[in-house]
Length: 127
Image (cartoon, rainbow, N blue to C red):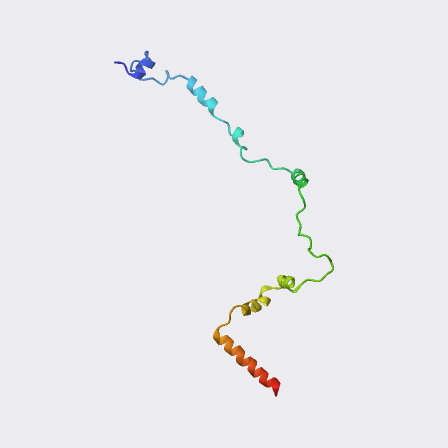
């Protein structure tokens, strides 16, 4: 029974291949398969554009959209003053934080102290 390699290459018949007998056509194919560095160097990286071309792309992108800006004031009269709630939004939080703290439920002791202080103040005013 013949082995597979002998069926494929009947002239070899189990002899070792010498270096001189190796086909050089395989080496040529391997060299042609190699890709030079210059061919793959800038595959992922886009070439940098100059400033004018970048600005041109920016302006081209802006053409089809509305402007991004603050929403227009909801007031009917633009000269009307702001409400107290709107003013609170612009105040520093530390100035307002005490007010929000008092909105929370007071403990029994805090209620006691507040009642005592108010009664003392009433007595002073009645004199």
